[in-house]
Image (cartoon, rainbow, N blue to C red):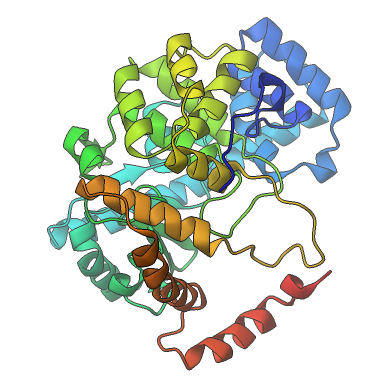
Length: 401
């Protein structure tokens, strides 16, 4: 690790494209400015080539501007996207109630994460925050029981490996039933894959109801932290990477901050605890400089002085730029960086001295092997070549130059 430094204001790594920023203004600014941004976006955008991130913003833009924007094809399309989001969210909420019933019968606590919580808690209407799936967090100790209970109700896990073999290399698992998609998490954030990582979140969570079912919700300050950690990134783990920054987290952040009092000391403590000060400097620095987000400037100044190796490595893992290569779709494995991050996290959580270089090297081969087995869903070492061929045959685009 050579030592990362945050980008200057003009080069925020999490910054969306200029056309996406117009849509953000349409979603967030006062109506006159929002209408101007909407009209500029309509005049410059090709609706037949709109990207998924921009598409997710159309329901909120239509909801805000339906009474003032000129009635044209673009507004009609946005209305259609709003209706589709309403329909899909209703299907997701229906599946969620069944999942909550299953977990309640098994006496397992559940916490709403991401879309299901944000759409029903902070947005003006649930359909203004489209969802692709439902995200739930269960206590780490109950993850395997939760998976078993859901599988008995017809949910099919994307991985064959049991949760106990995935715990160090994943923070959750995707499940499918009929047309419903569920992401069951035992850790709220990918970098923190420890049994005690989420104690801070559970400790401040509040009990609430979702369509008559008991659930937990993150404290609003924790939810803002989680939204930025999850959204202001170009990589979620050791190898995945997005060619362009995500966008929806920007609106999530504003909706949370407009609906609740934010405890910035809590945000600062979480950023330090999760080694995320430089990533959040990029996120909140962009939000404040470009869109006027009310983050305290002294906090940004303090984060800008951060020179901790763990924060620098986390920043690079989350927001690293990737150079072009011959097979661009193939995963870009960063095993050593990911493993080094894990050793820092474990040492900090246990209050131990940093791991010596020898112990770090000694544990690295087993970490890589376990990670590869988890990624390929290979129960044993001899299954890895078979599963690798199977994965490439299912996704031949990975080998497309």
